[in-house]
Image (cartoon, rainbow, N blue to C red; front, side, top):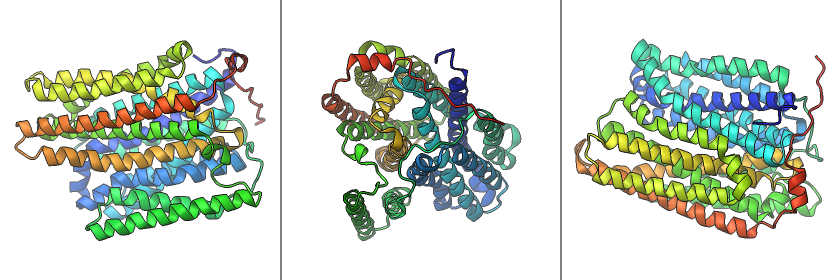
Length: 489
């Protein structure tokens, strides 16, 4: 728990947790309702792909601008504006009757969620330091695990109880009460807006270049190019925009202007390596979850509710281990991430082994066990790694530092969610219940284990590149809560 004497800090964390749960629940609950939605609005496969993946695309694009604007102008107003737009876009999506308006509403909702979450990370960095920050990020990760766990069973129950037509619409409305509650709490408990960046001028050109680079990188993985030439064009555009962005940022530094990406971030090897660890771990975990749900439903013929039951132990394990990870961090420090990644590799390989060896009757239960192991590994990895990465972001770039971290994770998710399921589908072609889906799942799990192995190597390199912190400074940061100014009402 956080220090009991600081009630204001605990209230701020509660608002942040509510915001994370609201935006993550909205994304998790929709996946189960996709078949019903497709039939209801006569959507094509491309429409459904944009409805589901467009949210993540817009989310990723909004993270860095949202973080930068929060650093420049304060976080509370942006948080509340983003949550209000998220609420209105969710209602619009739930009442839509055609694919076009639904896609547009989901894009707006994703962008609003990105703005909200960039303020959440920045606010946690503003308010908490030292071990308190690690605990706060751990509790924030718990909400993500719980929301991800509740999404599929809630979605399945709504579709089963209300019917396909009303069920998918209620799935999209499920986050609305959470958004209203979050707005109410934020108005009362978030600290008043304060600017943390010294320079109040936003790097508009850098912002446009970074958004363009992110867009051209993510779109080909959401909408697969139809030919090699088209893929080459997309790749060339990404390289060109990235090169122009790097040159532009260097010019601003030489002219004495603050670039969009703070120099302290790009010059910090621990920050860059830690962000790469987060990318590999995040992409691997999302891809593994998607492949598992497809394997259970299409490969083994399980219902949506039974599939949710198999995946539930993973979310429970992540929630519990996230809440307790700070205790292990206090004992062994950065090696906690190493332990978590090693355990994750073991869980992925165990999943591959049971898929190939276990009889069909007991396979779901065995996979639930590997999911529990994987969830515990995620809890030991995500928040400790995030804490280690963000400690290298200066106060004036707290929001943009968190935004870059989350944006990098979204890019990794787009790549992995396209590539790893393709591996599974290529190897799993065959009748349901046969050996081919098992082989496909085993191969995809090994790919995910390989991604975690890359993350483990990067984590070891990050530890070697991180200078030791003075013990006195570490002791001084143990309490780690910044007193919040009182806001008059």
